[in-house]
Length: 384
Image (cartoon, rainbow, N blue to C red; front, side):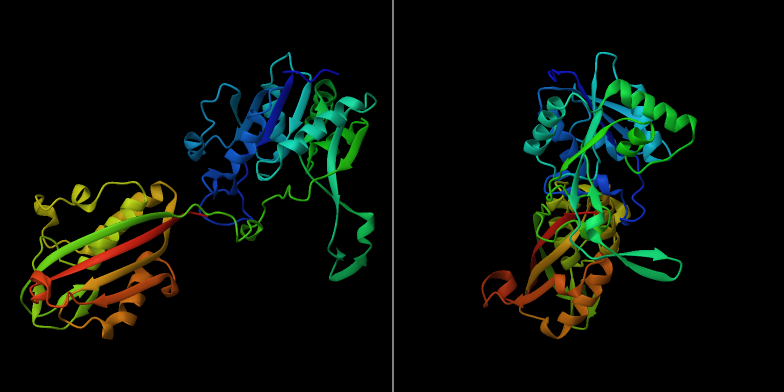
């Protein structure tokens, strides 16, 4: 069998990831600088003998448009169905006639290696008696079978965990999928459909690193989360007054801040840091002081808009750190209040917030007690 440029790959990616949780489906979660789906798809795009990759997605999914492979000449998008089986069948119907080998791979297995994929191809070519093959690994954990309210111990040696990619002869898979649809059957993978149709399928040792993401904690904690870093700086003059607001916390003193908005310099610097980390413009662009609507505007609204803009890019705050520079008032008594307030505004833990204060040692306008500055840094992570 010659596998040169006659392989079609189907990647069903239309699931809603109900067990994973989170705001977006697991296939669009970022791991490093790629989504789970991008990683899975890219493994096959780099293989010369793969002619086409068919990605089946929900027809209402908008995030697919931002995927790096969306305009790749090898990629064809298809609409998925209400089940994995239906999604695979719909993608199969779109496959070009000159294909004779079909590979099916879970969108949520981003760690499959190209070396392993090539091993599967070689094994498939070697055995002319089979109609397909699938990888399997032994189970390390003890197992129990649920029977009513009872949990009955079973021998783990009698069970295997089945992986993808799975490889099949096209004509055989077509018969199996048609039979599945005709009889209204549903399977957890296509090797079951093939066996149900009477075809000979071979099992070969799988790859333990080829993990499948089902739940949020299936993503190892040491995986690169591709944190993005931004900085923000703001300066304002003081004038006599009856108090200032920093981080949405009122600080009682005989000063006020000269500003077009409410003068919350901490939220201004943090907004710029967050926007900068997201590759966006600064707050002066989104809230110009030439606009009368921004006169005395609450800085909470500024940071809320910043968070909304970040969410559009599937980004959220991970941690922040800032330094307040002024001679007066003293900031230290308000540190815990600032952490609590910012934790609520940014929806991050207080342990992810650093608050520091210092003086200018009598130097310059700030050192003379006539102004205040904030230097902020923020990191972002991709929304899970």
